[in-house]
Image (cartoon, rainbow, N blue to C red):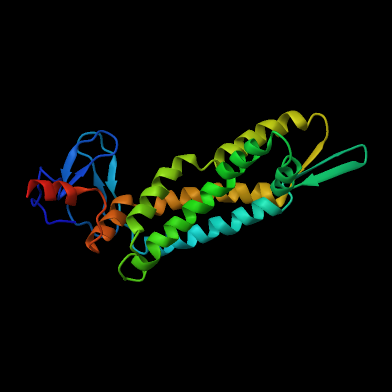
Length: 226
């Protein structure tokens, strides 16, 4: 961050906008454990934590491992009158892989599986050199921006809720046993909550900017002004 009271209204250097109400604040250096809040709405602007980069990397790898288990392990087993059948998400996808439902299957699998895994790899790409005290990779700013854009579209929580609602209706017709893949999705929700708790977007952007990478186009404004 820039030093206190050092800012430029033309380029936005040294200023921070609240993501909730757009109020502008002068950037200040924060120590781990300190919290910067908006003077207008009280929203959290920055909350750096010691060792947060390493913890986020570990949680990203945990997301990938849990997602692999959620794909290939049995998701649920339905039995009735002595007959039963167990299936996984991969098995369901393969069952509908032929015919007109193929685009729908691909879209659902991309939302449920592809986006969380892609976002985890983007975070690892961005944070690994920062956690080691090295300069970030060349496309770190773009990778982190894409990871933030993809975050609202990670549908693991919605998928688990929709599955639970459907199971309530199926339970009256047959005996339903939840498989390890279902619990992997539940664990994935907790991992996502922990990741959001450890993440401070402002701290990550500042670390990328301090390494000399352009992040928000201010250098283009500065070029036109000069």
